[in-house]
Length: 79
Length: 429
Image (cartoon, rainbow over all chains, first blue to last red):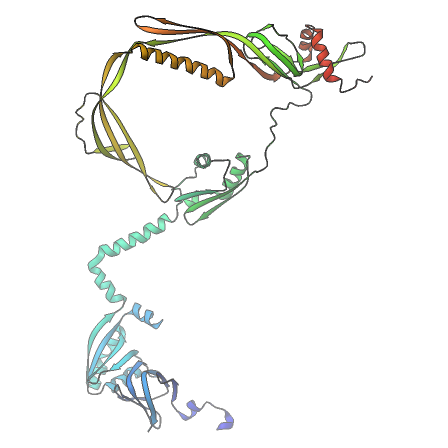
């Protein structure tokens, strides 16, 4: 796989998470939202769930391709 | 950026609550409905959604078992509906815009820079002639032609630049700084100038600097006589005239003559006697019509109206045809009075003083005077007989040589003076 140099997210179906400090997170390639509160946002990726823990979490925008979370992020966990 | 686009299309802020709001978000994403600014408040979520999206939301709400309510509306479509009730406002706005666009096509101010010899009034009048004035259409202005015309019509202007800056017409001028030599006094080679008398009289004083004098002190001359001739004869060795050399005649000449002047002053006169009663009022005017405010009928018999009038002015040079000012009506009575002796004396002195001043200004000297004042019951008459001395000469182009020959015979003396003038150039055969 490595030698073909193909992009991993397309091939593996993995989600891409871009964090800007602990203030913003930009997520691509996910299936949907599972849970959403001010302290916890849980997303469904291809094989696993991604969990954002923090305070005052808000979703700036949400489309089926990408979404942006803003707020004070404490932890990112993969379940 | 996105914000503005959404504003034009219109969007709403909605409150969503129910069973699973997360599922609603997923469905929105799948159905390509854009939602943003999603905030979770525990019981409910608030989010922004476009108007189009909102209408497409209905089946999704049903599917997820959630409910939505509009909290706020943003956007142009909502604004327009509010404006339905305020049509005048919108109309006013449009009118304003239109007015602004129209008036930007006219000239509202003229600025002239760099003129020193030519006054602004002179230039403004000239521009008026060329149909360039405030409140003219910009499109009617021809800049190239105007620049050319300015350069041609005024010798003193060496360079001009005309620009339109916004609604101001800027005219830059550079004037000729080199002093002009006075060319008028010099005649061409070949023609000379004479000095001729401007009035009849007796020559009392004559000193010639150049030219041939035709008269001597004590001669009586008529108006128009040639006093100094510009044709100087050049003699051959046997004292016959070879040719005439034309010069500018120059001399100091004084002519003496008599003149009588009489001035009459009546004793009886009418005087305006102001009673002291007056009324003030304001006036406004448009074009030529005027309205006086603050006055009904004028109760006086005879009266004077004096006042001041100002024109409304905007922006330096834009004058509106609207005037305002104040008027004062003063009552007077015409009274017939006699001057007293002292008054008559004073009047006579004044008249005499005026006569003398006029003469002094002209450079005339009074050598003798005989002043009488004749008094009758009705009037006084001042009669003056004066002998005046004046440099009453003016230059004129020389007459032809043929005419000159007859008048040079008058005196051989003057010829010698003429010869002295020519000795500087040796006569060679």
